[in-house]
Structures are given as C-alpha cells and as structure tokens.
Length: 223
Image (cartoon, helix red, strand yellow):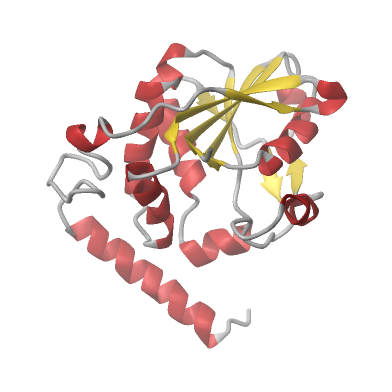
C-alpha cells in the first residue's frame, strides 16, 4: 500500500493528538472549564440558540422534517470544528446535546448516520457522525444502523455553490441491506445541516427502501 509523506505524517499526527486528548482532563471546548466529559459545560450549553425545524424534499415531492439541536453559530461552531482538531471525545458530548434538545422527545426504529468516505475516515482517524449516532443509540435505546456507505470521496462542501454541491454529491452514497428498512421509522443523523444537499441525496436513496417515515436530525443548522 502506497502512502504519500503527507498522508503518513497526518496519520501519526492524528494518533499523537488522540493520545494527548486521552491523557488530558475533559474540558468545555468553549470556556475550557474542567468537566466530566468533553463537550460543553452547563453555562456554555445554555448559550446554544434553538433552531426552528425545517423541511427537505424527497422523491415525488415528499416532505421530510429536519430538526437541529441548535443554530450553527458560537459554541456549536467550536464544537463541530473539533473534528479538524482530532478531538474525538467532543462528539460524545455532541450526542448528549442532540439527545437533550431533540431526540429524547422522539422515537424511531433506526438511527442512520451519514458516513464519511473510508479514505477521509482513515485520514481523520474517526467519523464524528458515527460517534454521535452510536452515543445517541446508547442514550435513547434506538438502534444505530450502518445503512449507508459513501462510495465517492467528495470534495469539502463549504465553499461550493448549490449547483456544485449537487454535482459533488451525485451518486456519492450506496444503500446497505435495504430490506431492513422497509416500513421502518428512520432518523438520519448528521453533524451540520446547511443547504440540504447531502440530506436530499441520502433521502432519495433511503426512500427506495420504502421506509414508514424519514426524519433528519443534526447537531447544528446553518441559517
């Protein structure tokens, strides 16, 4: 297997960062107060601004509700950006925020995380959405099901136009064992909802399995 020097350096840097994080006391990612688990302290948790639910269209103009723990600003921006700082533990705290603000009022058969491509997962050392979904499963008792695979290593979406986002994500996902999803209530899990392009591509695919219902649940929604 051939690795470039950059990839090898990044791989070992990720390992060192994760070792440092495991040896350091947990702290609030916003104010650095020492707390039991990495994430937000109570006072910084209170700074999260509630996000009004929205909708995204699916196949045949179906309307899929989108819920978020809060607006993508302030403390939630800092929390989401921990994925670039190799702070895997922060997303356990992110799951608790989503649960307290939204999921504890919901029920479903499966939580479906939107996955990273395996190359990006290897570079980063973890998939933050998978961590969120698995910890939401522990908190809620709802099964986390790996029903999607990312078969296209897409470019970062942040600086792309809506059309470029659509082209970037076209045919980026595949569905795993669609028969398990038939007539089930599904909640799609992601970290950030911006234009809805990613959610739309995933919803189109999951709707082919004919679930009973679909919802999208994220940590933060950009408005």
